[in-house]
Length: 291
View 1 (spheres, rainbow, N blue to C red):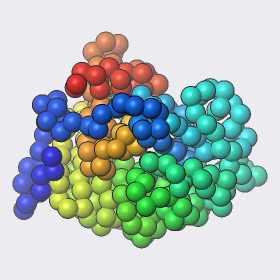
View 2: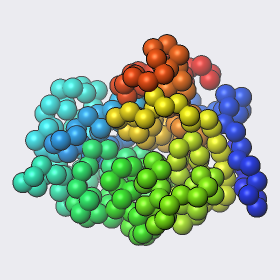
View 3: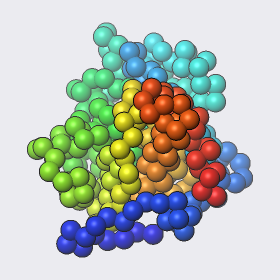
């Protein structure tokens, strides 16, 4: 259900009615038919980011999950997320995942339906070395989702992520870095990023495509501004892409589900103080409400 932005026209509002008229691919059959997700991240100081993203991907219906994380935390991650396969990645002396370590995940990169790169990576130089390796290694039809430090590596270098099915999930600070300037208009700036980097972009409730599609939803829930929340959103988007949604549909649906989960928790618990892990566990209920 794409809609082109023409001359500053208002974005299309994302509502349950719109989504019901733009249904996701059926989540039926075996785990393989529902798609595989690889999350690359999880340095020694922040393995939880990759775990949150991976669990979010499964909660929206992806069939298989692999987590490529720092070797020092790989065993703990495997125990904490028994639903996933785990690939240990070599680390620097300081505990950062090495950019050259992706060879260990080569088979997963090539075979995954969606690869999410960024959650829990914490070294700019190593991530910059990793990004082009990942872009070259993924399959032709793989959706590559970039978040967190991967966006910092991409900023100013639109060719670094290669060409293909790409989704960017910047927060406002990361969006400004991608543009190389302060944000002026969320609608126009999200479209500008999409066009400049030739990727679908989800930024603070705006979703844009390089072709000029523009969607918007209310994103004024302050409770979503909590540690790990962005990892949940990017994981949900990757999971929907693995299920077979095209990049724009995956970004629109995933952004909506993340926001809807926050709104539900704000009503049930409190406007501020719910946790990212609670967002993950709310995703299936919000997804089912749209069926």
